[in-house]
Length: 227
Ligand code: CTP
Ligand code: MG
Image (tube, rainbow, N blue to C red; front, side, top):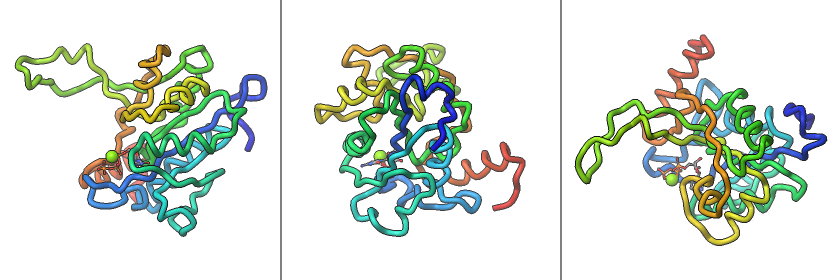
């Protein structure tokens, strides 16, 4: 597809891996296939990725590959995931073409990421960061189980899409490392992590109430009360 990053011809392609191979234990089912305002969560997540990247690899559970659930508009490839999120990321990375220079990793369970967020993440990697991570301030007062209140001004909550210099994320995943956050693996390998502004609306659907919250956020932002 045509690149909308504006720099991809001279600077190499941007690909996104959208991980959607989880079982949704906390949610009570595979949340990525539920509908949000008439469009499946996975389809929303992939469509924003496809609009901002040269290619998209979607990772689904092995038993979903080849079924109608795996027919995702905008996906260039659909591959089988692993037992853990990191395993799924590794399988997705293996399907990204070798000439990609920037690789993004996004949770299918975050259907409300915006184009602006993608642009900020890609720009930070283009500017030289090994990893770019969207973060939002922590609004709750946080208490440590060890006692005392933690200074929330020093804390940020991490979102996806996270962006990476391709060789850095491939190297971080060569060992069978496990992390819920890919940038942590790059950082552990000595790579620089840039923080970019995340978005409060970019929630991850985790528990059963979160779909209702996502629905309300979508309607609020789109001025759309249809369901
Ligand atoms: N994911 C994946 N492969 C796994 C586990 C998770 O691709 N083996 C994906 C999920 O589909 C989701 C994202 O990683 O898009 C973030 O994971 P999470 O929100 O934890 O989803 P689940 O693992 O499905 O939920 P739970 O942990 O409650 O079972
Ligand atoms: Mg999980």
